[in-house]
Image: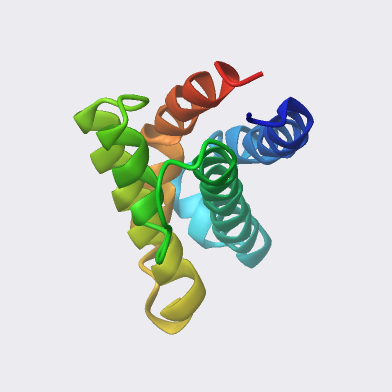
Length: 137
């Protein structure tokens, strides 16, 4: 059985991160990249948001005994295989995980244009995943 308090706590954190990320959307690309606090915040809170989603998914997989997680991408794959995610959302989540890996491991080569684009065009993917997780409350 999934423990709703675990999911709820992480969803609340995810909402905090999204509030910050949405506030950073107001900046033009030029204003965004000219301020290290802006792009640094965006990078960090995107990383935290993606980690929170993967943490929630991992809890669901473990609590329902759905399979073994050896890497972050196993989580969306397992949830999709078990019918909790459609293929499109699974693929979006896997791309987010890849982006998180770039933020964490390839921080010297981060393309800030992509970070800004994610803010402008892809935060809705996180909202979609929140709806999937909400069904476990």
